[in-house]
Length: 157
Image 1 (cartoon, rainbow, N blue to C red):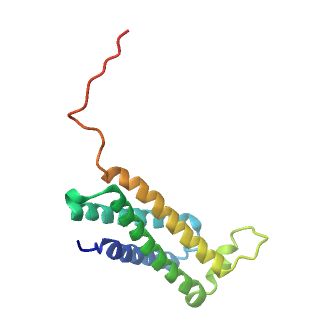
Image 2: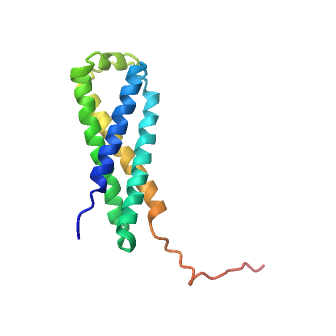
Image 3: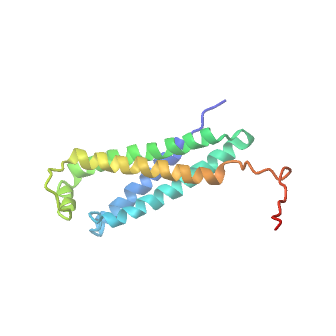
């Protein structure tokens, strides 16, 4: 049986969407506002949903919960790794003033470097992937409720 290319294809598409969204925010000066990271969740959700839908369609009757779950995780992890690599390059080479500008909004007595910010961005992507994959698999899994075994129960007083 051939391996599915859906996690790679959609992982790249999601990462491209995240990069474009981030660059658009940076053009209008809103990339330092954490509230706009909600858009990252929307892009990730849209991409993961479509990846998992295509994966289920590709597998047909052979679709299993565990394999669908893994396809969702791999898709999101691929996107997160690619976006995190872009983000690391962006904050260290493209816009070195980004990090101090973003951290100026936060009151902190700790020294926060590039490494910790990139690590947190990756963890946020992995957590978002995990939660969205769990949620979407509820839509794609087969129901255990069988129509032929369904009995009508009545409550008698």
